[in-house]
Image (cartoon, rainbow, N blue to C red):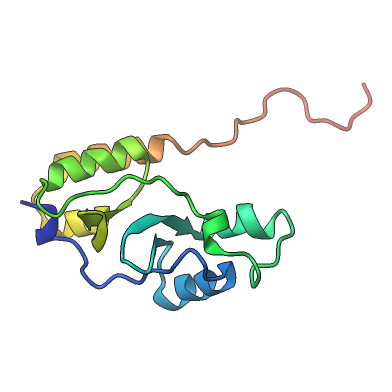
Length: 154
């Protein structure tokens, strides 16, 4: 099975010069967690996530309406080619610790593929399980506190 067999072809994207506020509205309106950032020529320039907006724009006190997406996006991102095997795409997601990949042909965005797209195909259970485990294992959980509770006089 190839990536092009399971990818989404209708992808909402944004240009680097558009605002972080617009990116946030698009993320909300389309119920997605990331947007490909493409130049006017359709070439992929990077990705912007809801997390990018919060950590690189809102938290430092920048105005999302005046902050260009190009200033907060992740410029280098993992991608897939439409003709590559879906298994390789799943392994790339695991290595990059992401749940979705932009699909590009000659540098231009042609779709997006997600772990969910691969799961719906029903043919890659072992590879998907490994990819999801690798991605999930990178999430750090707070260490449990051991020892006496603080605040008491002793």
